Image 1 (tube, rainbow, N blue to C red):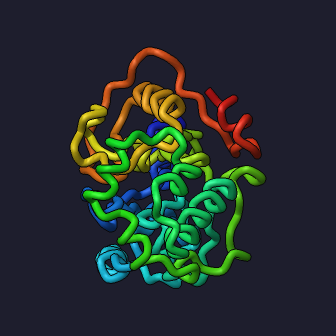
Image 2 (cartoon, one colour):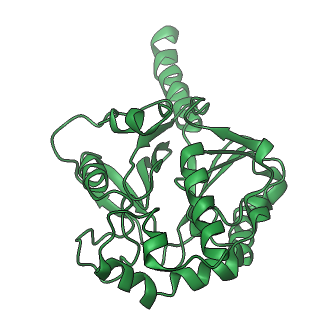
Length: 279
């Protein structure tokens, strides 16, 4: 009888241990049209910030961390879904963190910032970074004053020291319960993140799904895709996920996944062909 009574207790302890192994997820900054959603993942002494916001959002981010009882020095890792400045501009706040992201994506984004801050704002020049953008899409960028924002905000120091970066093309993500999803299109090396959390499964979509309203004519979508075909394929891929989706610039929502297996990757293959091959 004692053995029979011990079995439920053992199973209960195993379930409790499994729950502790999952991540505690907390939103540090909610997603808004001009404010990227920032998420804190915690487990034991591990604290990971996913996307850090514009440099000018540092106070909001620090307030969110303080509410969670986590200091910037206690953050052990930052994961950037991509390197548009509204998703990586507060990386400098975390002096102990290893920063994970796509090298190709960072090099591409920094080339844009240097071009814009060097005065190269004509559409013919900017099209080297967005070769598929239409005049209508450039008009949206102009109306949102995106180039002016970049000139105002860009400073290489906001990214933090490069020696703290770990490139996902070369290294697997070393955190059990977190899985990478290659979702290029919005940018060349965009990634999304699948999270096994204590209260269920989450998809941190970044700007592969910036808004809950994913229609192409959403007036809030003022940033064109780098590659329309890949962006559409990434959106379709994300629709296979079942759980809670956290868009890059909107509130979380529940999604019932479509038929089909959602494949993941431990790391991205270097070069554009490798990223495309993930589909």
